Length: 481
Image (tube, rainbow, N blue to C red):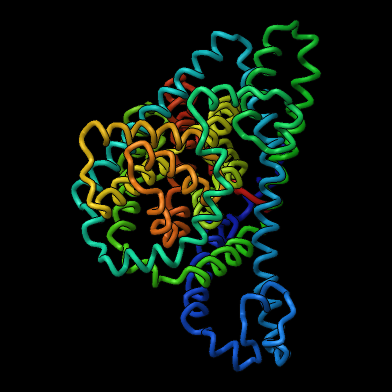
C-alpha cells in the first residue's frame, strides 16, 4: 500500500459567479442610462456642435450639424459601439437557437424510444402549460379589476400619450397586419410547414418545433441500426451548440451592460409617471406568478426527496433570468434556459430538450397576463365596463394570442389588437401602452422563461426523473471556467 500523502482537494474557486457579474452589469447600466437620459440633453449636444440629433446619430449628413467636433463624434462612436455589442450578442444567441431547438426536439422524442411515452410526456407538458396559463390569466383579471388603473389616467395624459406614440403605433401595426388577420384555424395549419427548409431559414419557431417533433417520431418507428447515425449526428450538433452557449455567455456581462444602458437612456422614466398604476398592476401580477404561483407548483408537484426548493430553483435559473430581463427575448434566452435546467437544476436532458423548445413557442404566461391587464386597463380608460362574458373572451383571446406570439421583443404589442377588437375597444389605445412597453416587456420575459423551467421541473417530478437531493452536486457554471 502506498504511503504517498492524499492530495489536497483543489481550493474552491474565488471567481465571481456569472449571474452576479450580470447583475452588477445590469445595475451599473441602469445607473449610467438614467444619468445619460436626464443629464445628456439637447443642450449638451448643441455645446458639441450638434443641432439636429436624430440624423447625426443615424449617420446622415445635415447642414445643421456641420459644426460637430471631435467630442460629438466620440459620443456617437460610444453610442454605436454600445448598440453593436448588444445586437451582436443577441444575434449570436439567435444564431444557435434554431439548431438547438431542432436538434433538442429530435433527440428528446427519439430518446424516449416509444411513441406512447412521447404522447405521455407531451400530455403532461401541455397540462402543465395550461395550468400555469389559466392561473396567470385569473391573477391578471383579479389584479386589474381590484386596482382599476384605467380610472386614474387624466384626459391630458391620455391625449399626450396618444399623440406622442401614434406614429410608432402605425409602424408596428403595419408590420403586424398579417398576424392580426390570423384565425385559430390558420394558426393550427401554420404549425406544419409546407417547406421545412424555408421554416428553418426564416426562423419560424413553432414550425421548427413541429419539424423536430415529427422527425423524432419518425426515428422511433424505424429500426435502431438506421436511426442511430441520425440520432448521433443531432446529438453532436446539440452538444456543439451548448458549448457555444458557454462561450457566448462569457461575454454576457458586457453585452447586458450595453443593452440596458441603451434601453434606459432612450426610455427614461417620464412616460412612466402618467401610467404608473398600470405598470404596477402588470409588474405586481407578474411577481405573483413568479414568486407565488411557480414556487407553489414546484413544492406541490415535485417529491420532497428531490430537494427542488424554490430557492434552489431560482438560484439555478438566475443566469437565464438576468439575460431574459436585459434581452426581452425568450427565444434569445432559450439556449441559456436549457443549459441552466440541464446543468444547474440537474433535470434530465430528454425532458429539457422536449419541454423548453416547446415552451418558448407556446408557453407564455407573462405575455398572457400582460395582454389581459393591458386590455382591461384600456377598457377602463375609455369608460367601457366589461361584462363577465367579455372578460372571459379577453382571457381566452389573450391565451390564444400568447401562444401565437413569437418570442421576440415587443411582439405581443402587435398581437394585442386582436384581443382589443374581440371586445370592441379602440386599437389606437395601444399607443398608450407603447409608452412603457419596453420596461414591461423585460419583466414579462422573465416570467415566460421561468415558466418553461418550471414546466421542466414539474414534468420531471411527475416522471420521477429528478435527481435526489443526496445526489445533487454543485451547479455547473454557465460559461468558460
